[in-house]
Length: 226
Image (tube, rainbow, N blue to C red; front, side, top):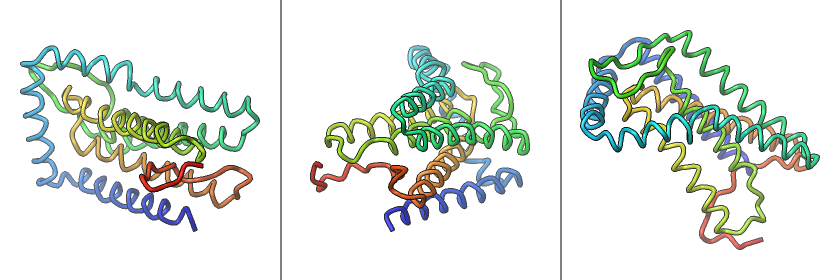
């Protein structure tokens, strides 16, 4: 079945996220040591490179902000609904809403403190784990890739993938660079986001081709254009 690899990938990501969450809750020292070391190194660079820091703030607060991502998801939903593709519109909406609920629920349950600096370059509120920016970007970009038609030209598919990957990795790095998240926060956001996208895409795929359900289009070099 076409969606079997997608479901397996989603399951693996969910399992890794569960293990990571347990380690964070138990305050496993090796993990915390890596988090702290990377946070210190990035913060040291951020405080001495104001131009880079300013760019990161613009990217994280505007370009890759969760509300910007949710607006893109809402636009996709409206477009699909207007075209009569209500099944996929609802799936995109559900994915975005579930992502918000999961991240907020986990933040409340885990209650992890954010990095604290004497000379902060940015600020953020509420608990740290998991990264809401990272999870929201992963879910929205993943669902938008899922919507890319298989008949799309290769250049369009590649462009979509490049933009999605740059956005997901970029927003994660920006949160780390600005010192408002630990590395494991961002990693958890990515893992949970991939797991959710895989779940939505694979479930819709099982419901039949009439719903146009499918896994995200992969830019494979050998695929013929259709």
